[in-house]
Length: 119
Length: 298
Figure 1 (spheres, each protein chain N blue to C red):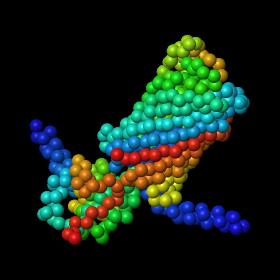
Figure 2 (figure 1 turned 180 degrees about the vertical axis):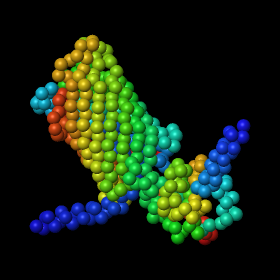
Figure 3 (figure 1 turned 135 degrees about the horizontal axis):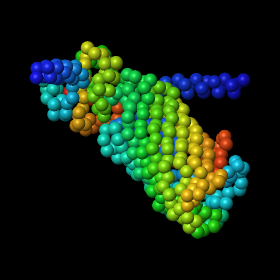
Protein backbone atom coordinates (compact mmCIF):
# COMPACT_ATOMS: atom_id res chain seq x y z
CA UNK A 1 0.00 0.00 0.00
CA UNK A 2 2.84 2.34 0.92
CA UNK A 3 4.37 1.66 -2.49
CA UNK A 4 1.35 3.31 -4.11
CA UNK A 5 0.45 6.01 -1.60
CA UNK A 6 3.93 7.48 -1.20
CA UNK A 7 4.59 8.12 -4.91
CA UNK A 8 1.07 9.50 -5.34
CA UNK A 9 1.58 11.83 -2.38
CA UNK A 10 4.90 12.92 -3.83
CA UNK A 11 3.31 13.65 -7.22
CA UNK A 12 0.48 15.56 -5.50
CA UNK A 13 3.01 17.64 -3.53
CA UNK A 14 4.98 18.37 -6.70
CA UNK A 15 1.83 19.42 -8.52
CA UNK A 16 0.83 21.67 -5.65
CA UNK A 17 4.30 23.18 -5.55
CA UNK A 18 4.40 23.79 -9.32
CA UNK A 19 0.96 25.40 -9.35
CA UNK A 20 1.90 27.74 -6.55
CA UNK A 21 4.95 28.79 -8.55
CA UNK A 22 2.91 29.84 -11.58
CA UNK A 23 0.34 32.51 -12.30
CA UNK A 24 -2.24 32.21 -9.53
CA UNK A 25 -5.76 31.38 -10.69
CA UNK A 26 -8.28 33.87 -9.31
CA UNK A 27 -11.76 35.16 -9.86
CA UNK A 28 -12.64 38.82 -9.36
CA UNK A 29 -13.74 38.36 -5.77
CA UNK A 30 -10.37 36.87 -4.87
CA UNK A 31 -8.55 39.62 -6.75
CA UNK A 32 -10.40 42.37 -4.88
CA UNK A 33 -9.45 40.66 -1.63
CA UNK A 34 -5.82 40.49 -2.72
CA UNK A 35 -5.83 44.18 -3.67
CA UNK A 36 -7.07 45.03 -0.18
CA UNK A 37 -4.36 42.90 1.43
CA UNK A 38 -1.54 43.89 -0.92
CA UNK A 39 -2.39 47.07 -2.85
CA UNK A 40 -0.75 47.86 -6.14
CA UNK A 41 -0.55 50.89 -8.44
CA UNK A 42 -1.86 49.33 -11.62
CA UNK A 43 -3.21 46.25 -13.34
CA UNK A 44 -1.62 45.12 -16.60
CA UNK A 45 -3.87 42.90 -18.70
CA UNK A 46 -2.19 40.58 -21.18
CA UNK A 47 -2.52 37.31 -23.11
CA UNK A 48 0.19 35.08 -24.47
CA UNK A 49 -1.24 35.31 -28.00
CA UNK A 50 -1.07 39.12 -28.01
CA UNK A 51 2.47 40.00 -28.91
CA UNK A 52 1.84 43.74 -28.63
CA UNK A 53 1.28 43.05 -24.93
CA UNK A 54 5.07 42.65 -24.69
CA UNK A 55 5.37 46.44 -24.47
CA UNK A 56 3.57 46.39 -21.13
CA UNK A 57 5.18 43.28 -19.71
CA UNK A 58 8.10 45.14 -18.20
CA UNK A 59 10.25 43.79 -15.45
CA UNK A 60 10.61 47.28 -13.97
CA UNK A 61 6.83 47.49 -13.57
CA UNK A 62 6.69 44.33 -11.46
CA UNK A 63 6.98 46.16 -8.12
CA UNK A 64 4.01 48.42 -8.87
CA UNK A 65 1.78 46.13 -10.97
CA UNK A 66 -0.21 42.97 -11.00
CA UNK A 67 -0.12 41.28 -14.39
CA UNK A 68 -3.46 39.72 -15.27
CA UNK A 69 -3.64 37.03 -17.92
CA UNK A 70 -7.07 37.13 -19.56
CA UNK A 71 -8.70 35.15 -22.41
CA UNK A 72 -5.81 32.75 -22.18
CA UNK A 73 -4.61 29.35 -21.01
CA UNK A 74 -2.92 29.40 -17.62
CA UNK A 75 0.17 27.52 -18.79
CA UNK A 76 0.57 29.66 -21.92
CA UNK A 77 0.24 32.84 -19.87
CA UNK A 78 2.86 31.64 -17.40
CA UNK A 79 5.27 30.90 -20.24
CA UNK A 80 4.83 34.40 -21.67
CA UNK A 81 5.10 36.02 -18.24
CA UNK A 82 8.32 34.19 -17.39
CA UNK A 83 9.83 35.15 -20.76
CA UNK A 84 9.15 38.88 -20.42
CA UNK A 85 8.64 39.83 -16.77
CA UNK A 86 10.83 37.14 -15.29
CA UNK A 87 10.62 34.12 -13.05
CA UNK A 88 11.45 36.11 -9.94
CA UNK A 89 8.28 38.21 -10.32
CA UNK A 90 5.93 35.30 -10.87
CA UNK A 91 3.94 36.13 -7.72
CA UNK A 92 2.76 39.28 -9.55
CA UNK A 93 1.07 37.15 -12.22
CA UNK A 94 -2.64 36.36 -11.87
CA UNK A 95 -4.72 34.22 -14.22
CA UNK A 96 -8.36 35.23 -14.70
CA UNK A 97 -9.84 31.77 -14.28
CA UNK A 98 -13.45 32.52 -15.15
CA UNK A 99 -13.41 35.78 -17.12
CA UNK A 100 -14.87 37.70 -14.15
CA UNK A 101 -11.81 39.96 -13.80
CA UNK A 102 -11.85 41.01 -17.47
CA UNK A 103 -15.59 41.62 -17.19
CA UNK A 104 -15.25 43.68 -13.99
CA UNK A 105 -12.58 45.95 -15.51
CA UNK A 106 -14.39 46.00 -18.91
CA UNK A 107 -11.37 44.65 -20.76
CA UNK A 108 -12.31 43.89 -24.34
CA UNK A 109 -9.03 44.65 -26.07
CA UNK A 110 -5.42 43.92 -25.28
CA UNK A 111 -3.04 45.16 -24.05
CA UNK A 112 -4.91 47.10 -21.37
CA UNK A 113 -3.88 49.04 -18.28
CA UNK A 114 -6.01 50.01 -15.30
CA UNK A 115 -4.63 52.43 -12.74
CA UNK A 116 -5.54 51.72 -9.12
CA UNK A 117 -4.29 55.05 -7.80
CA UNK A 118 -7.10 57.17 -6.40
CA UNK A 119 -7.65 60.28 -8.49
CA UNK B 1 15.63 56.57 -61.60
CA UNK B 2 13.27 58.76 -59.55
CA UNK B 3 10.56 56.14 -59.90
CA UNK B 4 12.94 53.45 -58.68
CA UNK B 5 13.96 55.57 -55.66
CA UNK B 6 10.30 56.29 -54.93
CA UNK B 7 9.45 52.57 -55.11
CA UNK B 8 12.43 51.69 -52.89
CA UNK B 9 11.47 54.31 -50.29
CA UNK B 10 7.87 53.08 -50.29
CA UNK B 11 9.14 49.56 -49.75
CA UNK B 12 11.36 50.71 -46.88
CA UNK B 13 8.49 52.59 -45.25
CA UNK B 14 6.26 49.55 -45.64
CA UNK B 15 8.86 47.29 -44.06
CA UNK B 16 9.45 49.77 -41.22
CA UNK B 17 5.73 50.07 -40.54
CA UNK B 18 5.33 46.33 -40.80
CA UNK B 19 7.62 45.94 -37.80
CA UNK B 20 4.64 47.12 -35.80
CA UNK B 21 2.71 44.03 -36.82
CA UNK B 22 1.76 42.31 -33.68
CA UNK B 23 -1.16 40.06 -33.18
CA UNK B 24 -1.50 36.36 -33.60
CA UNK B 25 -5.15 36.07 -34.40
CA UNK B 26 -6.60 35.57 -37.86
CA UNK B 27 -5.72 32.60 -40.01
CA UNK B 28 -4.34 31.62 -43.39
CA UNK B 29 -7.73 31.17 -45.00
CA UNK B 30 -9.21 34.39 -43.55
CA UNK B 31 -10.14 36.59 -46.48
CA UNK B 32 -9.23 34.00 -49.09
CA UNK B 33 -12.82 33.09 -49.84
CA UNK B 34 -11.80 29.44 -49.64
CA UNK B 35 -13.13 28.69 -46.16
CA UNK B 36 -15.39 30.04 -43.42
CA UNK B 37 -15.38 33.84 -43.64
CA UNK B 38 -15.83 34.83 -40.00
CA UNK B 39 -13.17 34.17 -37.39
CA UNK B 40 -13.15 34.93 -33.68
CA UNK B 41 -9.98 36.06 -31.96
CA UNK B 42 -9.44 34.56 -28.49
CA UNK B 43 -10.95 37.59 -26.74
CA UNK B 44 -14.16 37.55 -28.78
CA UNK B 45 -17.25 35.58 -27.89
CA UNK B 46 -19.48 36.40 -30.85
CA UNK B 47 -19.31 38.20 -34.16
CA UNK B 48 -21.67 39.23 -36.92
CA UNK B 49 -20.52 39.33 -40.55
CA UNK B 50 -21.99 40.86 -43.68
CA UNK B 51 -20.23 40.27 -46.98
CA UNK B 52 -21.23 41.69 -50.34
CA UNK B 53 -19.58 40.38 -53.46
CA UNK B 54 -19.80 40.70 -57.19
CA UNK B 55 -18.45 38.36 -59.85
CA UNK B 56 -18.02 39.31 -63.48
CA UNK B 57 -15.86 38.57 -66.51
CA UNK B 58 -16.99 34.95 -66.74
CA UNK B 59 -15.38 32.53 -69.15
CA UNK B 60 -15.94 28.78 -69.15
CA UNK B 61 -12.90 26.53 -69.25
CA UNK B 62 -13.48 23.06 -70.65
CA UNK B 63 -11.91 19.72 -69.76
CA UNK B 64 -8.97 20.41 -72.08
CA UNK B 65 -8.31 23.83 -70.58
CA UNK B 66 -9.72 25.79 -73.50
CA UNK B 67 -11.54 29.00 -72.73
CA UNK B 68 -15.00 29.57 -74.11
CA UNK B 69 -17.63 32.25 -73.91
CA UNK B 70 -19.68 31.69 -70.79
CA UNK B 71 -23.28 30.59 -71.18
CA UNK B 72 -24.21 31.65 -67.66
CA UNK B 73 -24.99 35.04 -66.10
CA UNK B 74 -22.77 37.97 -66.96
CA UNK B 75 -22.97 39.26 -63.40
CA UNK B 76 -23.42 37.45 -60.09
CA UNK B 77 -23.95 39.42 -56.92
CA UNK B 78 -24.21 37.77 -53.56
CA UNK B 79 -24.69 38.59 -49.92
CA UNK B 80 -23.33 36.46 -47.08
CA UNK B 81 -24.74 36.87 -43.60
CA UNK B 82 -22.77 35.06 -40.94
CA UNK B 83 -22.76 34.73 -37.19
CA UNK B 84 -19.96 33.18 -35.15
CA UNK B 85 -20.27 32.09 -31.54
CA UNK B 86 -17.58 30.83 -29.19
CA UNK B 87 -18.61 27.50 -27.67
CA UNK B 88 -15.51 26.75 -25.63
CA UNK B 89 -12.31 28.75 -25.04
CA UNK B 90 -10.70 27.10 -28.07
CA UNK B 91 -13.74 26.23 -30.20
CA UNK B 92 -16.13 28.44 -32.07
CA UNK B 93 -18.86 27.77 -34.62
CA UNK B 94 -20.36 29.89 -37.36
CA UNK B 95 -23.32 29.80 -39.70
CA UNK B 96 -23.28 31.44 -43.13
CA UNK B 97 -26.44 32.24 -45.08
CA UNK B 98 -26.14 33.19 -48.71
CA UNK B 99 -28.45 34.92 -51.13
CA UNK B 100 -27.70 36.20 -54.58
CA UNK B 101 -28.75 37.99 -57.71
CA UNK B 102 -27.89 36.76 -61.20
CA UNK B 103 -27.96 39.09 -64.14
CA UNK B 104 -28.01 38.32 -67.86
CA UNK B 105 -28.76 41.26 -70.15
CA UNK B 106 -31.89 42.96 -68.93
CA UNK B 107 -33.01 39.94 -66.91
CA UNK B 108 -32.13 39.27 -63.32
CA UNK B 109 -33.24 36.90 -60.59
CA UNK B 110 -32.76 36.91 -56.82
CA UNK B 111 -32.81 33.75 -54.68
CA UNK B 112 -31.30 32.20 -51.61
CA UNK B 113 -28.21 30.06 -51.95
CA UNK B 114 -26.63 27.38 -49.79
CA UNK B 115 -26.15 27.44 -46.03
CA UNK B 116 -22.88 26.51 -44.35
CA UNK B 117 -22.16 25.53 -40.75
CA UNK B 118 -18.55 25.75 -39.68
CA UNK B 119 -16.44 25.08 -36.63
CA UNK B 120 -12.84 25.84 -35.80
CA UNK B 121 -10.84 24.27 -33.02
CA UNK B 122 -7.56 25.83 -32.03
CA UNK B 123 -5.20 22.95 -31.37
CA UNK B 124 -2.15 25.12 -30.98
CA UNK B 125 -2.24 28.80 -30.05
CA UNK B 126 0.65 31.13 -30.75
CA UNK B 127 2.60 32.40 -27.77
CA UNK B 128 4.69 35.57 -27.70
CA UNK B 129 7.37 33.58 -25.86
CA UNK B 130 7.64 31.11 -28.74
CA UNK B 131 6.81 33.03 -31.94
CA UNK B 132 8.33 30.31 -34.10
CA UNK B 133 5.47 27.95 -33.21
CA UNK B 134 2.41 28.45 -35.44
CA UNK B 135 -1.27 28.63 -34.66
CA UNK B 136 -2.96 25.43 -35.74
CA UNK B 137 -6.71 25.21 -36.18
CA UNK B 138 -8.85 22.28 -37.24
CA UNK B 139 -11.72 23.15 -39.56
CA UNK B 140 -14.96 21.20 -39.82
CA UNK B 141 -17.71 22.49 -42.09
CA UNK B 142 -20.83 21.30 -43.78
CA UNK B 143 -22.61 22.93 -46.67
CA UNK B 144 -26.32 22.30 -47.01
CA UNK B 145 -27.40 22.46 -50.63
CA UNK B 146 -30.51 24.60 -50.28
CA UNK B 147 -30.12 26.82 -53.32
CA UNK B 148 -31.25 25.74 -56.77
CA UNK B 149 -28.36 24.16 -58.61
CA UNK B 150 -27.26 23.72 -62.20
CA UNK B 151 -28.72 20.20 -62.06
CA UNK B 152 -32.23 21.49 -61.38
CA UNK B 153 -32.19 24.82 -63.17
CA UNK B 154 -35.08 25.83 -65.39
CA UNK B 155 -34.15 29.25 -66.70
CA UNK B 156 -31.96 30.10 -69.66
CA UNK B 157 -28.39 31.15 -68.97
CA UNK B 158 -28.47 29.48 -65.55
CA UNK B 159 -30.19 32.55 -64.21
CA UNK B 160 -31.79 30.51 -61.41
CA UNK B 161 -28.58 28.77 -60.27
CA UNK B 162 -27.59 29.82 -56.76
CA UNK B 163 -26.31 26.65 -55.13
CA UNK B 164 -23.83 23.85 -55.58
CA UNK B 165 -26.49 21.16 -55.80
CA UNK B 166 -25.08 18.69 -53.27
CA UNK B 167 -24.28 18.64 -49.58
CA UNK B 168 -20.60 18.55 -48.76
CA UNK B 169 -18.60 18.09 -45.57
CA UNK B 170 -15.19 19.72 -45.27
CA UNK B 171 -12.39 18.72 -42.95
CA UNK B 172 -9.10 20.53 -42.83
CA UNK B 173 -6.32 22.27 -41.00
CA UNK B 174 -5.18 25.88 -40.95
CA UNK B 175 -1.59 26.74 -40.06
CA UNK B 176 -0.77 30.39 -39.37
CA UNK B 177 2.29 32.39 -38.38
CA UNK B 178 0.86 35.70 -37.23
CA UNK B 179 3.36 36.96 -34.66
CA UNK B 180 6.13 38.25 -36.92
CA UNK B 181 6.16 41.28 -39.17
CA UNK B 182 5.63 38.95 -42.10
CA UNK B 183 2.51 36.84 -41.63
CA UNK B 184 2.09 33.61 -43.53
CA UNK B 185 0.27 30.33 -43.49
CA UNK B 186 -1.47 27.57 -45.33
CA UNK B 187 -4.71 25.64 -45.17
CA UNK B 188 -5.56 22.24 -46.49
CA UNK B 189 -9.20 21.25 -46.83
CA UNK B 190 -10.79 18.04 -48.02
CA UNK B 191 -14.37 18.00 -49.25
CA UNK B 192 -16.57 14.93 -49.03
CA UNK B 193 -19.65 15.43 -51.23
CA UNK B 194 -22.89 13.53 -50.89
CA UNK B 195 -24.77 11.93 -53.77
CA UNK B 196 -27.66 14.00 -55.11
CA UNK B 197 -30.70 12.86 -57.05
CA UNK B 198 -30.99 14.78 -60.30
CA UNK B 199 -33.27 14.44 -63.33
CA UNK B 200 -30.51 12.44 -65.04
CA UNK B 201 -29.93 10.07 -62.11
CA UNK B 202 -27.95 9.89 -58.90
CA UNK B 203 -24.98 12.21 -59.22
CA UNK B 204 -21.90 12.03 -57.04
CA UNK B 205 -19.16 14.52 -57.72
CA UNK B 206 -15.59 13.65 -56.79
CA UNK B 207 -13.70 14.39 -53.59
CA UNK B 208 -12.32 17.88 -53.19
CA UNK B 209 -8.83 18.92 -52.19
CA UNK B 210 -8.23 22.61 -51.58
CA UNK B 211 -4.89 24.14 -50.69
CA UNK B 212 -4.69 27.80 -49.66
CA UNK B 213 -1.34 29.56 -49.37
CA UNK B 214 -1.14 33.02 -47.81
CA UNK B 215 1.58 35.57 -47.20
CA UNK B 216 1.32 39.18 -46.12
CA UNK B 217 2.26 41.84 -43.66
CA UNK B 218 0.76 44.48 -41.44
CA UNK B 219 1.31 47.92 -42.95
CA UNK B 220 -0.35 49.47 -39.89
CA UNK B 221 -0.81 48.23 -36.34
CA UNK B 222 -4.49 47.61 -36.96
CA UNK B 223 -4.43 46.44 -40.56
CA UNK B 224 -3.38 43.40 -42.49
CA UNK B 225 -2.57 43.05 -46.18
CA UNK B 226 -2.35 39.52 -47.47
CA UNK B 227 -2.26 37.76 -50.79
CA UNK B 228 -2.29 34.18 -51.82
CA UNK B 229 -3.44 31.39 -54.03
CA UNK B 230 -6.02 28.64 -53.93
CA UNK B 231 -5.30 25.33 -55.61
CA UNK B 232 -8.48 23.30 -55.92
CA UNK B 233 -8.83 19.86 -57.38
CA UNK B 234 -11.94 17.71 -57.59
CA UNK B 235 -12.20 14.13 -58.79
CA UNK B 236 -14.50 13.10 -61.61
CA UNK B 237 -18.26 12.67 -61.21
CA UNK B 238 -20.31 9.50 -61.19
CA UNK B 239 -23.83 9.28 -62.54
CA UNK B 240 -25.74 6.23 -61.30
CA UNK B 241 -22.37 4.72 -60.39
CA UNK B 242 -20.87 5.27 -63.84
CA UNK B 243 -17.79 7.45 -64.08
CA UNK B 244 -18.22 10.49 -66.26
CA UNK B 245 -15.19 10.94 -68.47
CA UNK B 246 -13.29 14.23 -68.33
CA UNK B 247 -15.38 15.50 -65.43
CA UNK B 248 -12.54 16.13 -62.99
CA UNK B 249 -11.94 19.77 -62.09
CA UNK B 250 -8.87 21.86 -61.50
CA UNK B 251 -8.80 25.50 -60.39
CA UNK B 252 -6.04 27.95 -59.55
CA UNK B 253 -7.21 31.23 -58.02
CA UNK B 254 -5.41 34.31 -56.74
CA UNK B 255 -6.60 36.69 -54.03
CA UNK B 256 -5.53 39.91 -52.37
CA UNK B 257 -7.12 41.01 -49.10
CA UNK B 258 -6.87 44.14 -46.98
CA UNK B 259 -8.40 43.84 -43.52
CA UNK B 260 -8.62 46.01 -40.45
CA UNK B 261 -7.88 44.40 -37.08
CA UNK B 262 -9.49 46.71 -34.56
CA UNK B 263 -10.20 44.92 -31.33
CA UNK B 264 -13.34 46.86 -30.56
CA UNK B 265 -16.07 48.11 -32.86
CA UNK B 266 -16.35 47.29 -36.54
CA UNK B 267 -13.81 45.75 -38.88
CA UNK B 268 -13.70 45.77 -42.66
CA UNK B 269 -12.32 43.41 -45.24
CA UNK B 270 -11.80 44.09 -48.92
CA UNK B 271 -10.89 41.22 -51.22
CA UNK B 272 -10.03 41.00 -54.89
CA UNK B 273 -10.00 37.51 -56.39
CA UNK B 274 -9.28 36.14 -59.81
CA UNK B 275 -10.78 32.71 -60.38
CA UNK B 276 -8.86 30.35 -62.66
CA UNK B 277 -6.16 32.97 -62.87
CA UNK B 278 -3.01 30.94 -63.36
CA UNK B 279 -1.65 27.49 -64.16
CA UNK B 280 -3.77 24.82 -65.72
CA UNK B 281 -7.52 24.89 -65.11
CA UNK B 282 -10.04 22.25 -66.16
CA UNK B 283 -13.83 22.34 -66.09
CA UNK B 284 -13.54 25.66 -64.33
CA UNK B 285 -14.97 29.13 -64.59
CA UNK B 286 -12.71 32.13 -64.98
CA UNK B 287 -14.08 35.19 -63.18
CA UNK B 288 -13.16 38.34 -61.30
CA UNK B 289 -14.55 38.69 -57.80
CA UNK B 290 -14.75 41.71 -55.51
CA UNK B 291 -15.88 41.31 -51.90
CA UNK B 292 -16.48 43.92 -49.24
CA UNK B 293 -17.21 42.69 -45.76
CA UNK B 294 -18.19 44.33 -42.50
CA UNK B 295 -17.75 42.56 -39.19
CA UNK B 296 -18.70 43.54 -35.67
CA UNK B 297 -17.78 41.84 -32.46
CA UNK B 298 -20.75 41.40 -30.13
